[in-house]
Image 1 (cartoon, rainbow, N blue to C red):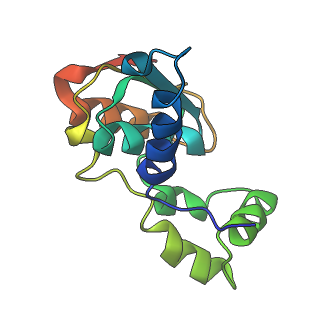
Image 2 (image 1 turned 180 degrees about the vertical axis):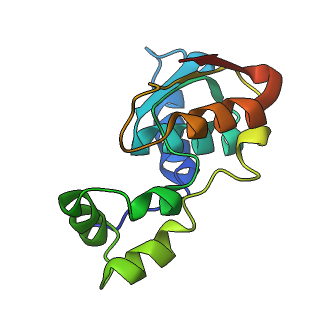
Length: 142
């Protein structure tokens, strides 16, 4: 089992490489969607893998480290495990890499950001920030 990685464009690149090898797939029309943690991964993948032609980001965080301490204990424990961290402090340090600062602005394909105003794990301001930094390529649904 591998630790979570922040550079999700790497596995997305491999997935699109595979799709390009299939004659039954139009690999010029690849879109991705991610929910919560996956939403952040989707934005990062779209920023660095330009074969992604459209992205839906649903309730994903702008900065994982900002949300860590406010998470329920079971959620923190899960992240410690998934990050292969040795403690909450180690997990928090690793989560600092999971940040869209300087990344969202690189998304050039259409990006739909969906976020709930009552989200208890990821504040809606983070969705607003993702959309704002992505600029004209983004549409925000609250």
